[in-house]
Length: 379
Image (cartoon, rainbow, N blue to C red; front, side, top):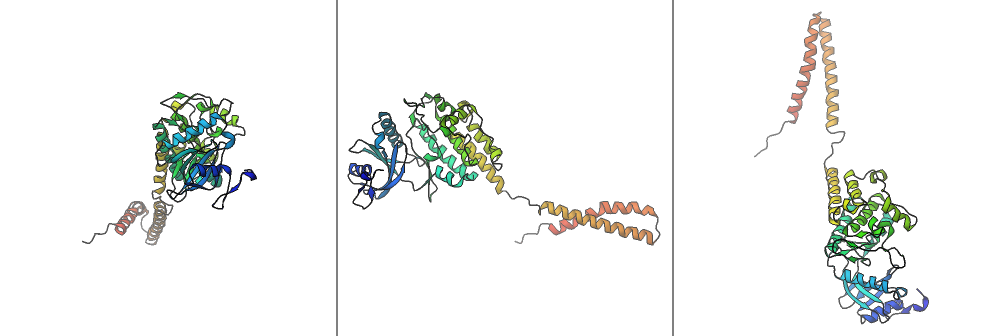
């Protein structure tokens, strides 16, 4: 931001010219507080909407991008796509507008928290049940978008918001969203050869400029799930074309090999979501989310079941064996002493052994039952 662009607003906060233009375009109803983030195409501000007394986010096209007709079209398409979605897992757009200098902007829901990308950068990998919650929420939002004829085409951690406090998971940034009916041939390259989408999360068919439908978003969601579970992407760069080639040609490393604690059922769900052929994947983002959720639920249920610790039944068995061995040895010693002391025939030894082998366990079993028999319930 150039120093000459900084002006002091009435609130006492230094603002750039674009922020002031947005305030002017909204008639002063939107008062910009600070810059939230800057991307390749747009800048996002945190602002206060005075008429409704609420905090909002304002996304404005960058001035240097405003001269590009294709970028203008993409930005306006994003505003229309998000404004047309009414879903708790998709960031809401409240209004759209244009500054006096011709820069389009839209006012949207402000989500206080962090992106999934930020959380992964901070924590590396996430617990299975947290992954399950995030994947299920994003899958639900994608299912809604797909049901309304939109393929997102840029599903990635940077476009997933995690709200602080409530834990809500929201999908945002529909700048590449494309209206489709069922399967439509959609190019993934701009006229200048710029790859549309994020190489690390592209589906094979999107990377090859093939047929893109809802299953493409499902693949990208599976890449996200892999990254959250393993703490790394299924494919590694360093160049964008390296990611593209691997998505098209290579098989990702087996999840349990990277992270042995990942249950096999969860790994199978992710593996299917990452199949090269769209027809081999789950039929929808919803189906993938349900499959991963079911696998994670089964794991949680198994972990919640009371486990027999070594001091449980096993310990009782060891104790019973030790008692039996000690008692048998003592009885045999006593019988041998009796036979030798009273000079009794050794033919008594065989019945004595039968008594020890057969009678002693029966006696111990009866004693155990007497000790643990159910007690009568008092009326």
